[in-house]
Length: 318
Image (cartoon, rainbow, N blue to C red):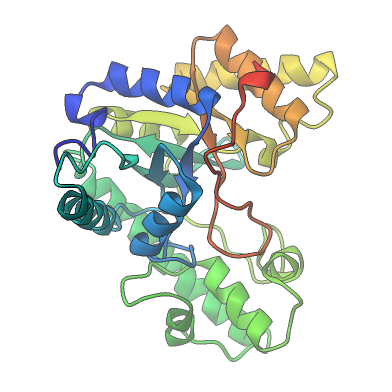
């Protein structure tokens, strides 16, 4: 795949960090996307097709608890390169977007669940497969427990039902439960199902066994990767961003996370306000952390944002 991964083929963690930071601010990139390998609606091939349609210069696939979709992303880019080469009779990879392999883990910081994005310089990061397998098994155990809870509440839902909302390889989760509940008329939308039934503290919610921030950041670092906290605004950390107390509390949290090995902040998220994004970027700059941009697109017209495009830029917030 020479040329497709011009940046990460250096296998240099520092170069990857600089690329993620500078390209996120300049725009035309999206480093937080999901596919049918977790809770996204599009296959990796369809994700690549949308990336091309949107004119992105670089992107990452960050499915929950799995990097299994990476191979299909690479295959899709390879096919595009070969097709372009046949048509142009020249270097086929110059116009292809750069791809950064990634993943999204759910972890615990105290009593708060947060998400950590991992970005890597290799398709198959060394030593990470065991940790990923542990996370997948934890997800499977929680799925069985929540399905049993849902049935006790009167919803006749089975594990096989969840697979109708993905592919054979899909690692199902709460989103797939929500899709079943919506299709069967129990709730108006996925968001509604989470608010009333599946979200934290709701009747059908059962927590997963999760590793700590420090453990996860160390695993990512051992595999040669970079750890970035996803969407901090969703944890309520940037509420009232104009207040000095919000800034100081956020600084304290980021200092603690940095001490545990965190290397970056997803400052520019598809659902964050400009004020929240500016605050996060300021804090990241203050502590010399990577600033990344990710829409968190899941390929559905639900509560998630659409994929970024060639015109998306955040220079005005710096």
